[in-house]
Amino acid sequence: MLAGIASKVQEYSNAYEYLVFTSADQKFGLRQEVLVAIIDMPNHTLIPHMPSHMRGVMDYMGKAVPVYDIRKKMGISPLTEEINTLIDSLVQRKQDHLSWLEKLKEQVAHGQEISVQTDPHKCAFGLWYDACKFHSYNLTDYVTLFDEPHKRIHSLAIEVGILIQAEKLEVAKDVIHQAENDELQTLLTLFDGAAKKIKQFTYEYAVILERASGQRISLLADNLEYFGLLDEVISPLPIAFSKQHSNFIDALGRKTKGDGTEEILILNIEKFLLDETGNPPLLMLDGSETLPAS
Image (cartoon, rainbow, N blue to C red; front, side):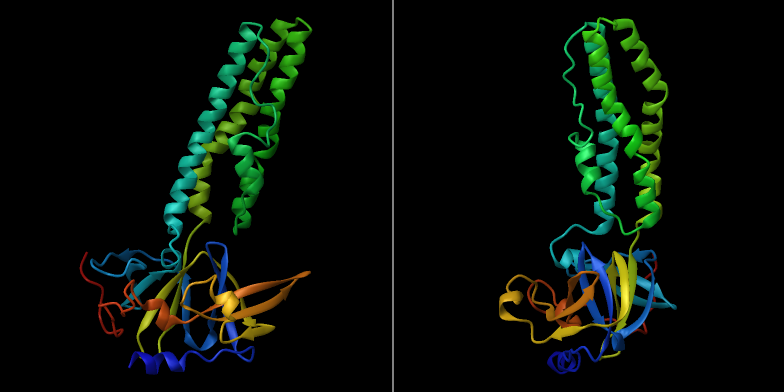
């Protein structure tokens, strides 16, 4: 039965429209015919003894729908874990800057040569800031607010160092005191608000599909890119390319975007559902079940 179902969903060409979405910065494509709905990821119920890439089941229109995580299938942390790790990291980056300022104050108090990091691009937060990318414009706008106060805090060390060399120790202390009540407070407020903003603007989408068997399932997506025709679809997957990707990818899509061409991995849903041993999951809801009581 599985082979029969798979054979019905393995026809790929640029004559079909595709939903293109992102998971862990990789673009994936799904044939338009299998799509049922796309919703913000609702609460879900955990089910024991299921494949590692099955998150649980969620309610959709009163029926239980299995939820699968492409990230986990690829051996990557779920988006929820990634968000929590990011929030924990920003808490540490806040503490880094408090410790940085305390060290600067100590060096000034003793008239020592300034040794704290003066380049805002080289501290741990600066390295993350320069490399970070968000799908949410709101979150990108919020993070951009860090730029000026963060640069100002680090430039403070250069300014203070010049004052110490000029034997203007008291002026240097005043400059630091002013920065503590100005730029530093702005920076700390931004760090304190980061967790709320990240949780507010970073969330998963549930892409609900209907298999050839009639069963509905849901795949988790980090971001929805677009829906439409692709310029080219190569099927079967080129051998050289297939060695780099998971065995649940059946075709390679390409679409011109700006001055370049982006590549989209076309999913084979039946292969994706297989567990670690190559077997279908034990729980194969037919769409008639309701969610188990929590």
